[in-house]
Length: 187
Image (cartoon, rainbow, N blue to C red; front, top):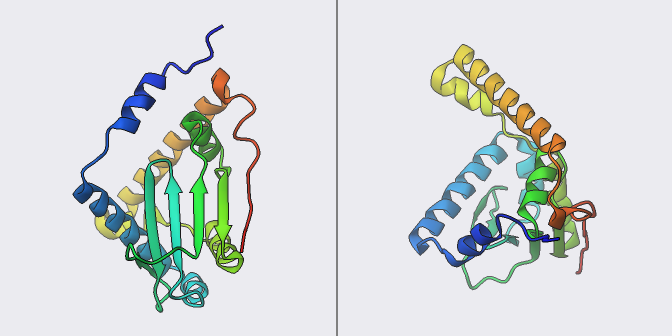
């Protein structure tokens, strides 16, 4: 029986296609701005990050990588390439289907952690407690009623997608994987 994914061709093509450097830079800068926007909504998050000012966090998910520098204000900026990371967080991307399923089920994706244990603990606290209030941001742009309706529609779509993913069988290559999380901290 053939156990290869029907999407293996697309996965191989996606690995070969690399976006231009300017696009990668712009996407990274937008992610930093979004992260800082969310951090500014929670003073405790900024206070916790400010304690680790000057630390560099290397994030990796498949081909995507981003180095973040924690600023004295408790926000983030892109780290210069010459700065070595204090902490490396690598999201396991062995099977994208399994990763998507676990995220849609509300589970944290499997992450490999290497480096500063205290910094990892602070980022763990952020992952558990920091949430982006999309509806609040939308209400500033379009008003409370349309923002509430749009956020409700988005929640229904997400719930339907979660239900679909829960009911769909996992592909053969994904069975048994994605359940265990490799959490390790080396200092």
